[in-house]
Length: 275
Image (cartoon, rainbow, N blue to C red; front, side, top):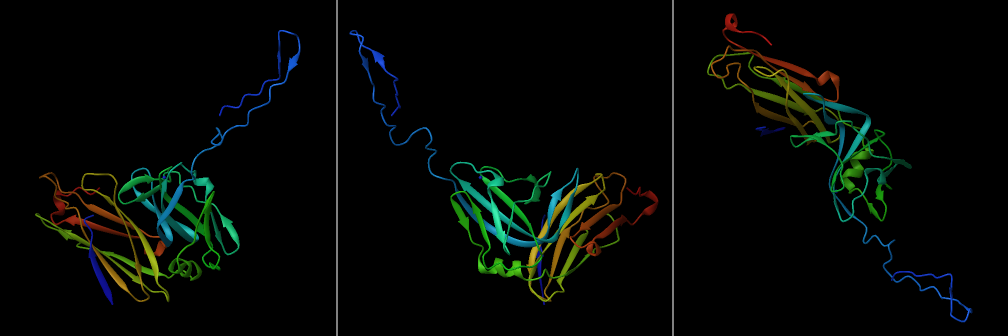
């Protein structure tokens, strides 16, 4: 069983101690109570909405000029949030799981998501990433913050309790192409585990005229035994009539054994300069 997809790539209080009258008698001034809405009134609390939740084996993070996958020792719960009203700090959030409390993870360069570099949680919302044990009881799982709480839906709780499935991932394509060339890469992902789960992949490219460049982040959820094939239009070794150069694609996944490299060379090797 498989499926295919093609990717193009947050009153004034007056208190007087007293005053002297003309007659020299002391008059006591009674303090006036502060009206409702004093300067300590900050208005309504922020409204936090969790728009997406995913249990994943790793997250894609940016490096200097490429992207890689940061694997979890156990599993990550990645929450996408929006915040309305007063801003709220990332450290105000806490996730309860299997009887323990967890704080959001910090990644120096943020996350790579939707083609955007360095995504971070801000006052308007954004991603919250929690690193959790691979399994545990999620019956009382809760995300909490001052004046608010969110309960993961049943599907997310089931994913947190089940062991992460294993995946087999391959990267294929033509090894040599002639001009004009329109090579296509194919990433094949198979869930070899016993439960449904989500895979996460980072793909980078070197050549024909760049030292290193991110191609994209790919992820998806597969049932046990299900296969997905992702087609990607690759760069040609022949660019703008310049000397043809080898193009190299490097795939990174949470499991090192799924890392892969694929090279596309021009047919005329004598005129080719490899990167």
